[in-house]
Image: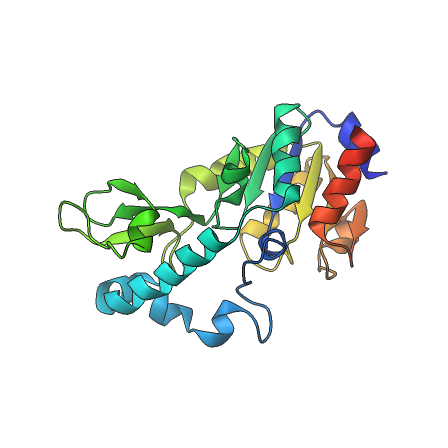
Length: 237
């Protein structure tokens, strides 16, 4: 049973993907028909090339994304994960998501593999600002440099320090829980297998089956992540 594994674990790592965000009302990137990249070519609006060559389109695309994040809020599942961290049940979270909702909900040890839309920074001097700059249509730093969201753009690699921290956490895990990820994006999808190879129990909770399901000890499909977390939390109480 899920809660039995959680109670026995001494180092639980949670890995979250788009399914965690969509339950808060945020759009997915890759879902057929509804995904963001169905309507936009990411290389034209969300890349380093767009930032340098078509900056006004870049600014407007990411302003809409910032406003989208501000229109939504973390669902109950985020609060449960933050509570579990405070209680020592969960040791860390690795996330593919850029909404920053784990931190908004109160989680502290979060590895954001693709950065966050909660802040922007200057492309020139590196100074950071809150994302209200984009909300107010202020796209330039006091130094005159362009402000960009603190996310990984197309054409950039994942932040090395964050990636290596996620590797270390995966290797230390004795329980690794995947929440709302199709596990199709490399190299981030290797963390569950890394944990499994190092002796961890693997749980995958996702609406659709994944290609990694055969490696998991427990698989839950056709149920929302938030609902599963609430159910688990009731059993832990």
